[in-house]
Length: 96
Image (tube, rainbow, N blue to C red; front, side):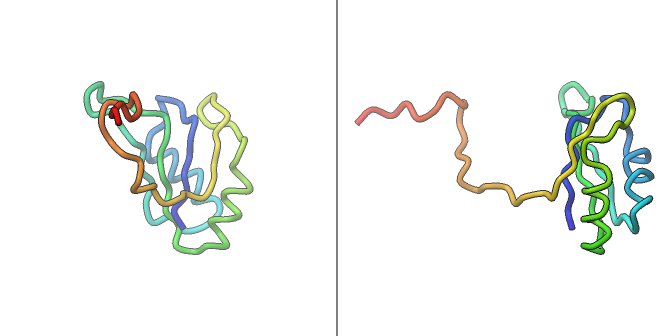
């Protein structure tokens, strides 16, 4: 199961994230997402756990807990919506 972890401290690293989730079972990967321009954490990441029961226990056990001075949010990752559109982010400005 792929798990989304939000509100991470900018100081949290992937080893810390992995170690915290390994308390609940096997972790395939732990990845923190970084801003390519500023080269710092965006404050969220993903943890992959092959056993769904262990993953659910990790979600239940870690959501709303403290990690590196921040209260984190942990939930099952949802597939990205492919219809998000693109562009400038100012909405659809086409005139009909």
